[in-house]
Amino acid sequence: MSEHNIEYVRERMIELEKEARAYELAHRCMAMKKKKRKSFWVILLSYFQR
Image (cartoon, rainbow, N blue to C red; front, side, top):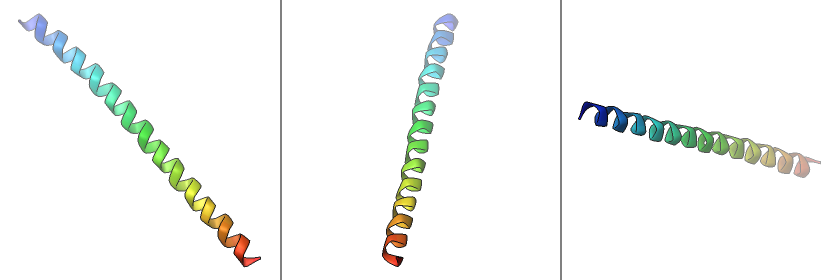
């Protein structure tokens, strides 16, 4: 029973690590998109100011 529990916990830890990694990647991707959007607006504004 205890061995089974250890195995279960190990599997859960691996799953959580994968989820955390995926979340981090998604968060980074969103941050990149926001930066890109900001630079896009800067380009538009500078274009109109010309």
